[in-house]
Amino acid sequence: MRTLGKTEQRTLDRLVSQDSGLPALLLMEGAARAVAEYVTRVLKPASGSTIAVCCGRGNNGGDGYAAARLLLACGDYQLQVYETAAAAGNQGDAAINRQAWLQMGRLIQPLEQFKLQTGLVIDAVFGSGFTCDRPLDPVLAGWSQKLEAGRADGRYQVLAVDIPSGVEAGTGKADPHALHADVTLSFFYAKTGCYAYPGRDLAGLTVVSELGLPQSYLDRLARQAGLQAPEVITREDLVPWAPARPAESHKGSFGKCLLWAGSPGMGGAAVLALQAALRSGVGYTKALIPESLYAAALTACPSALIQPLSEQDGGAVDPSALQVSLKDGLSWCDSCLAGPGLGQPAEPDTRQARWEAMENLTATAPRLVLDADALNMLAARGGAGRELLQSRFRSGLAPAVLTPHPGEYQRLCPEGATLVRTDRLKAAKLLSDLTGAVVVLKGAGTIVAFPQASGRRQTEPDLPANRLWINSSGNPAQAKAGSGDILAGLLAGLLAQPLPLWQAVLAAVFLHGSAADLAAGRQAGRAVLPGDTLDTLGLAFRSCKWQ
Image 1 (cartoon, rainbow, N blue to C red):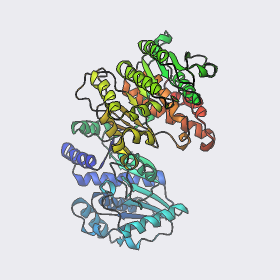
Image 2 (image 1 turned 180 degrees about the vertical axis):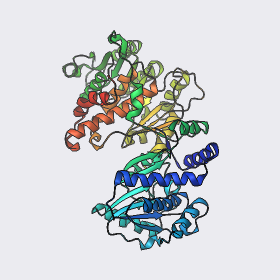
Image 3 (image 1 turned 120 degrees about the vertical axis):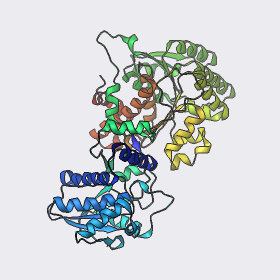
Image 4 (image 1 turned 90 degrees about the vertical axis):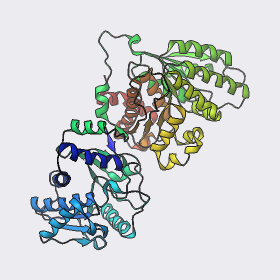
């Protein structure tokens, strides 16, 4: 699902008016009508209740004045209109709608005089024009605090027009006093900030109105203009991607997945990743694990191929056994996952043997997922780790898929340590550009970034170069050790199957979150274990019509 930021929204507004011939004033009327219809048909305030419309400078304020007029005409409501000091200087279409309200003999009060006992508040103050470089002034901050207090005790319901005031449309960054809405009504497309945190928490339910224009028409204009704001991964996206599973299929039809995982004391990570891969629908799954974990892995996953790796004194895997098994496995598999539970050995010889194995992996694996300690291994090598990934990308192999959480990200990309806390979209893009890898930056609203395609041969010709996605599924029940292992295994399993790489990655991210949503729906989220997410993974597939 496409989203728009501030610049993209303004560009599309202009293009729609120019291409369709519809004047901007008519589009503003359409936006106001969408607000009024949502209020009367969905929110349905009681007859005689109060609706306070708060307007600012610019087109968002113009939408508010017009919506107030339409609500006055379509229901028995008590309408109050407030405006910021700047709104009095509105020009153009916003000024026309402001004057129309006044011509009806209605009042406009200063926002600092906002007073409402109970009712609906419509926020039309900033819209997509807000930037954190210009914080909310004391009047707006005080108004937002009043609304939050009223929401908390159930006196107010808040509808934001386009995006809550105080939230950046393109990033989701928010002013400390940003408005908290119950519903956000966006036009043409949702704003990126309604799905990127912290804006996602402030937007409430996001609803989109196309203002009576066909979605296909808007999509065409957006493509022609090259508008490339982040997209949102939704269930509706996944439905048409479902790979066929013909009746005459056999296990060889659905790919072979190889896992290199586990170490003494961290066998659970290997088992969770292995179980997730098995549940992905892949035909074969093989795990290379230390021989001390063989019995546990075989008991937990009897349908997997378990290849034990001989260990030296102290528990380290024998380097020669690792190299031989890895070479054989890479010649057999369609995808490979490395990292869950591998550990970080202190012995220089063991570390060097693992690095050589990593070099082999990145040079030959058809599709590759690197998670957990595989990422730490790359981070420990600094520039050499990045160059290994870039070399793979330049060679024409499918880009590696990296799955860092914020801590792993900071080790891989020290220059992005601040970004990963303040602008996760830019952070994911930075690491993708530096490594030539697909980056799955885990966390609330997981970000997926695809690298630039220039300077490489294309083995994945449909790879969406230089693009960003935000996941719409998932919840805090995933904030537990083991959740990332399940995502890594699911990624590897789907990548082994006959799916475009980009669809496999986005599907795995969404399905992982969807399974957690289903698990949290059965019990308190705090009690959900990673194994519960595995149990609901089949239901998540079914909800997307993947059989």
